[in-house]
Length: 365
Image 1 (cartoon, rainbow, N blue to C red):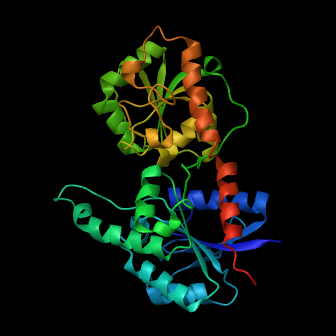
Image 2: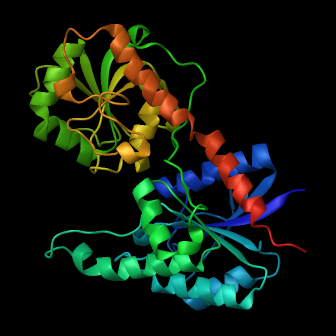
Image 3: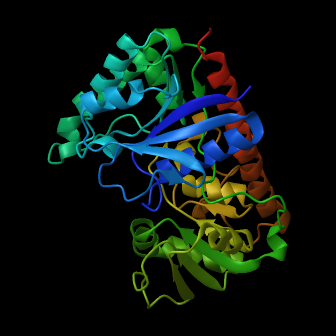
């Protein structure tokens, strides 16, 4: 029997949105492999889309208020199971969507058969006192704790997030899955060996990351290129004209590409360079893409993400670990390790975990 679920998202394509892409790909796989039908509720009143998106029914809030949210969720025909994709800044500019928490609380109180599942893509921000994130952090934490208490089930993408959530909602202990993100640009079934790929280094992830890697870590980047015999650096996702032009290696800027074009380029390249917040690799869609597509991941520094299975020298390399004498087999082993790490939580495995959870929390007749 087909199960119906409503997924709440900040926005969907054509907006650039990692969370929206995640929810959409999950919905496709739930439909194709588990007979679970999704409809979407987009919470950005300015989102430019219609009532249908890629075969899925879409509702949109006209205003971000608890009253309108409760009305939408309580409407006739709405699924009783709601899957909220939570990232605070997606629902309110300061990352404190009080309206969302209050609306969900009201809906849960009025609808006895309601079930709320929350995927916490992020928890809360932090920063120095001169940044707004410092002052918003306390309220963000309080809201996330309230949501965890309100939810029937929680999911997140990092072990440290899971531990924090269990501490705030003890009833989720032993019931909270930590599923690192899957690749939102796609996966491949045929994986080319590194020796069969072009001697090309990819930097994928937008202007911020490309600029940092090619300027702040220029020496490390060039040292890796020399040791690994790279003949070209290709940036993806940054506007043309953002990369330094005086590097002693060819730098090609591809700008913004389609998902299929990105997959083709990464899966035929040998090395993928990236940087990310320390300890957060499991929630990096770029790292997921590199691992899924079999490229050799390189980070400019150690990223302490061991709790989620990401280990320097095992599932990625740092410049100080790379030597020109490293064998092709040793490099291939790291790429294979990253791909195996990814395989355990790829789109298929992730959708299976969601399907089991959604069917488990289905209201009884």
